[in-house]
Image (cartoon, rainbow, N blue to C red):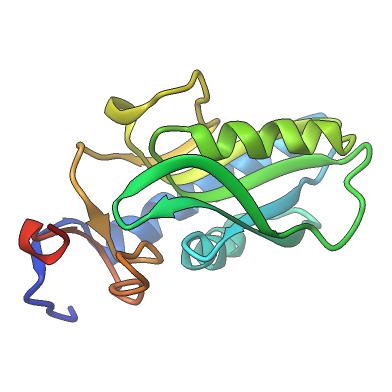
Length: 181
């Protein structure tokens, strides 16, 4: 395992992420196959990319995926002002959307993204997230597929960052407080 002295503790190992991604992929396959549909996966850049890469290995459907770049964070805090930096490349009218997210924290970003999907004509919108931090939720948004619930700690790795650092850690770790204070 790649060591990093800025990490206070490892919360979730690479092996746990791989196992849970397999379970989620199988569940997503079952749920959408039962409806006779295949979702368009919309990954929110950049943090969700490693999770997307792992998850799609286990979705046994003819899926497609696209990307959005949406931000509300400066440093460690969500500012509540959602900005779409990159929109979807094609129409989503009458499509089933599965948003792929790295972490659901306050829910503000996802709430806006979900509303945007419906305004663009999506038939349905569901959310798959690697991490869920329910203690910080400021909206009623909830994910349909959750990898792991995590405590109210500043987590990095496996796509999640602090000022663009630590994204490539192959696990989820708690960042030492002195690194971001």
